[in-house]
Image (cartoon, rainbow, N blue to C red; front, side, top):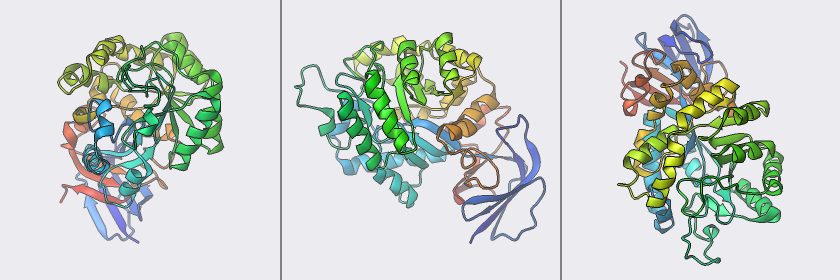
Length: 411
């Protein structure tokens, strides 16, 4: 049993709007045991004085792709799995250094990668994986060239792919069951066209009602949920109506559809950082011209989507969806959202909001007894300046995940 006493902290509780100075936290065996407004009397093996700095929950990114080591996803199947794992390790460890102690992988990462983190082989964030995302033939997960034959299916390309093709109710049931068998924490589907895929326009509607409902039913049988890539109002509306819990991206959502999402108690996870990065760096990093052209359809609508979501009272998650070398811009999502949201709204999305989305309320995204001891000590006040959560973790003086200290620059 190891006890860690953090004291002289200004505690940032995402449920509140101001810091609580003079606070203290007692951690025992990876769990927060006590939170107080004074120094805690219990003996502890490790005592850390925060020097009045901000103590806050670890951050959560609900849309990453740990194996997306190349911005051109069509190149992934040719990467040896051994090399892929080592490059994914570097990406994950950089995420933890930025203060992200939990991530939801939105397609590609497998049980082995998540287990490597749990065993400490990778000093990265806790991973909730989706396995390979389900896509219809010709859907967003189908990266084959138009010249590829019908037998050249994405599901036969090995582990280095973000998705798999499944068509028809029987096939999608089997695919969902297979991903759950392989360790998926939730199921990801492609419900509209996308930027990275070569052949499907953004406005396409993907998967039938019967197929989506079958996937939702299989996820529910495992007491989990379905997340869906979707951009347009039509794609978002039908996915939510058919039982999808989490809409990814949602850039083109309108006010009426946002109200529909709110009425169905579903979430939307905007990923605005990826569109800015794609516009600035995508062409130089090998993104195909067809994708650059499609980017224009969704890039400018991103901030407007936040306004629609806020006005309708939609529960909003925090995600980034960055690919390849662009993953260094993960924390840029904070400053982009700051253009239309307050700092506490952004922080809530990346902590308690994502915790609810991931069905881990009370365990993640909070500084409270019984929660995992995922804690950051920040030099400065993020409620006044979200820049404190950027610059590759430069302002993070301490990073703790599940009671293990990965960074400590305090005396």
